[in-house]
Image 1 (cartoon, one colour):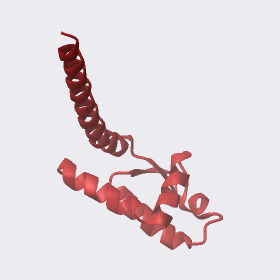
Image 2 (cartoon, rainbow, N blue to C red):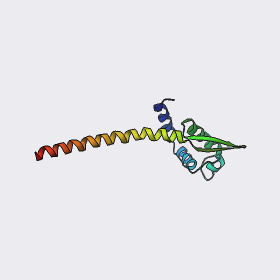
Image 3 (tube, one colour):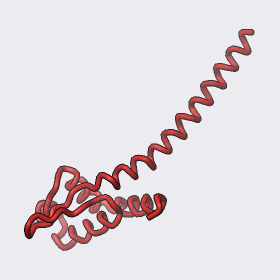
Image 4 (tube, rainbow, N blue to C red):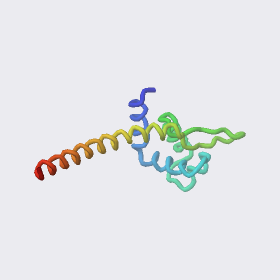
Length: 112
């Protein structure tokens, strides 16, 4: 999947507040649907559907241990998102550097 499409899926997946809550619970370590749903205002089947969307977006992986399915963070998906966001930081730093250099040039011109 192309990076831009993958990032769109990530933002779509995290756009839902319940899904973000599910994702936060998964961040704490591998958990079953029952463990994730515990204490939430949504049913286990609803949590399963949210996990399906998160998995499709590349944010969650499923690990099968016997008859249990444990959900955890997909490090590759998080890294792709981080790299995409870092692109904004790189752009901002480059613009800041240019502005600082221009200011320094203007200061030096005034002192000559």
